[in-house]
Image 1: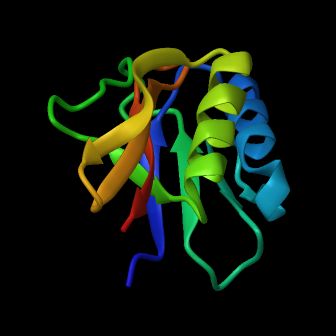
Image 2: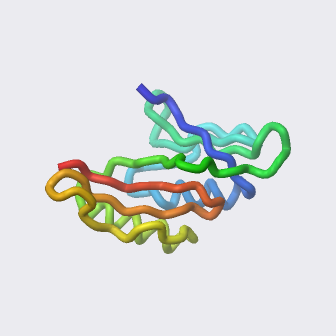
Length: 123
């Protein structure tokens, strides 16, 4: 249902490197680069993440209560994505772990621009 999600960033090159590096194991690349906005994913026609410099030229702002959750294939992949994000400059927002017994496992980071991300597994 989701075509793409857009987040504001301060440094396009740094953001593109962060997200393509974070999801390189899934074949992520910059699919469309239009200068102030770039779409990152495996290929056109699949859900993507767009990083962009705000159109109004003001500083990007992270929303209070906003978060982008990325489904992981397993708890191990959630752990790996968390570690990869930290190695790429993200900050910790909650180490990997079971959040709801037998129902939800997740790990949380903030990207270099402060956007909150979750890598999760249901079940």
